[in-house]
Image 1: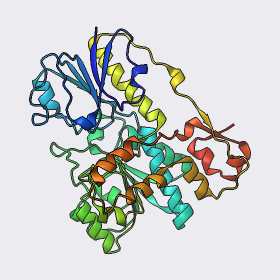
Image 2 (image 1 turned 135 degrees about the horizontal axis):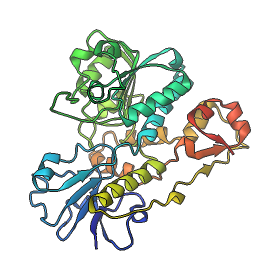
Image 3 (image 1 turned 120 degrees about the horizontal axis):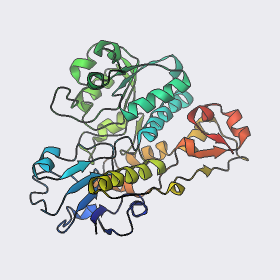
Image 4 (image 1 turned 90 degrees about the vertical axis):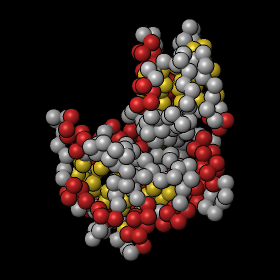
Length: 370
């Protein structure tokens, strides 16, 4: 019998676990759980695993998986040294993050009258998320450049633009992992040097905190060299810089990848990798991936109002701003990420046909006729 210890917030995880397994949930708010007599430990980004946080890795433990695309909260070398297999759920939230980016841009168009169609965009990091961002930008006819030298080194079918080319774009959106070392470190990728003598209409960070050097970005913004900031991730997360948040046009608590479908993907992917490691068969309940009809037929909306009705980006923005100045903002930041229902991705939504005709951008986002 496979003994599995899992973060209780891994979405609908029990639906993916074989019935003959022993599944025990724990509350990550109580710290590192007792993982003795455990074969596999499934966790989230709120749990850091390294030699300092978990100095006594159980000898029974064979597998650690994170239900997230990012994995900078895990010391992989430490696990390898202790014979523990590691896996992530890379790509699980790619579409959700891409939709966050396009939603923010559309709100700039609707509410701030930014001519987003005329801008040139630089996508920095073209893995699963950056690729999805590119697909949506293609759908809207946007002009963009793709920058990802590490991918170019391993993918013969991909060619990265140059550093100068991407930095010359009008808007930048970041989709890279957090790496302090190696051949392509991303910590403080956007710093004083890259910002010097450059102007940007929009900067979007929905990757990891610390990719942007916040002090440098604040200085550039205050000098008038950056018009709009969209920030979902923060240097000292779950704490965040209130001053930086106040400068942002949109400031959210690391929820760009939060959707019903992304969370199902995360649980499904990490469980599948776990079961593959143990040589166990699994089946995925596709009935979990339901579509949703939103009945708005008798309500009149502006483009902006309708988009905000379908995506909670501005609700999260308002909730985060309510934390500015509070001494307990770190704990409340976590609660913002855990206490709200997940939105449905656009491709899983349907609306009445007249509404889609009146708001053509909806179809481009992937919303279907009911």
